[in-house]
Amino acid sequence: MKLTGGEPFWRVRNGLLNTYPALDKDLTCEVAIVGGGITGALAAYTLAKAGVTTVLVDKRDIGTGSTCGSTGLLQYEVDVSLRQLIKQVGPDKANRSYLLCLGAVKKLLAIARGNRIHCEMEARPSLFIARSRSEIAGLQEEQRLRKKMGIKVDFWDAREIETHYPFSRPAALFSEKGAQVDPHRLTQGLLLAAERKGLRVFDRTAVKHFLPNRKGIEVITERGCKIAARRIVIAAGFEAQNYLPKRFGQLQSTYALISEPVPDLRSWYRRSLIWETGSPYLYLRTTGEDRIIVGGEDIDVVKPAARDRLIPAKTRILSKKFKALFPDIKLEVAYSWAGTFSSTKDGLAYIGTHRSLPHAFFALGYGGNGITYSLIAAEIIRDQILGRHNPAAAVFAFNR
Image (cartoon, rainbow, N blue to C red; front, side, top):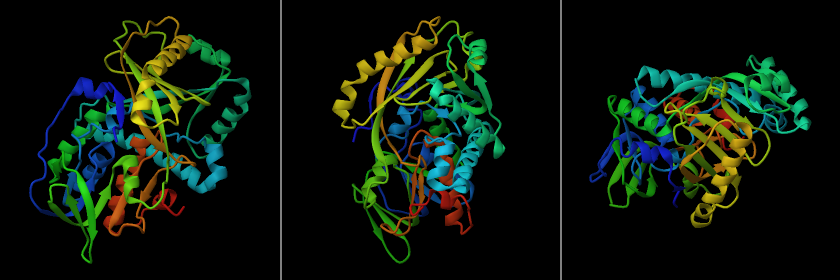
């Protein structure tokens, strides 16, 4: 399936940062990873750092699938509010999921810095704005629940918002705990760092099927090559559904645009991440090149041709919504694109083993937290492969 349409900016700007060979011989390793986007890259980096001999394959060029369609917002909030999540999965798992995502944002910043990966990884504050007065009480409750578990977040009324931004909203939550990144460059940087620790990477290598056996599992490619591994990690996004007996997420399409460089962003307080309550979704960020990214307008249409036909109309809607927030900023669209993603009812990822495929681990970072979930998945899977207990595993298990 064509995962993105239009002109995803990271792919246009970065091109092919690194090239890898296609697999043309049989290999043996401890762990084989299927998927070379940000999820696979984080799993590969984490496993290689732990001393696990690892091979990674992808049927596309590395990092050119859904990763290129990501807008690179890093937030600890999941797609379901904390108060709703508590009702769905209970306070322990809900609180733990938020704290795990918060920790993942900090770790991602440290990983990029520690490996000198030039990917525009920057800490950014986050503003979560209400669309109507009916949402004020919900935001106040959200603040109370987050502060109760130690996450500092400020409640802003309309006056406070108007003090810092050129727009007005009934209320908002302001947090210092966000970040942003070029996900394509981060993916490439992680794989280079992992290669220095022994990782072997092959792209344009499609997997045909798996053959589990008593010692592990064989990955058979379309060219007939075999990778004999003790374990595999399937990090292929929603395409991993091909290896599961039922669908664990709901497919949707989302839209995004990026502007030409903007000469004056002074009215944008601290260049914060901005996102709105309600549906259709809307979020905004800036880049290191003084560009603006606007995204959202999610819909249930997922067939690539139908999805992509809507790019011009969705781009106009996103531009109009941006203008309502920042009337002083002239936004000239440089590129716009669409992408397909999967979300879950509770907003949580699916991570770990499933009885349908022996010796396999799934890293399905569904929803808007794909990058933070990917790091959490990498750590859970690493610990399970090494025989360590990781209490986070129960939060994201298939049988939760």
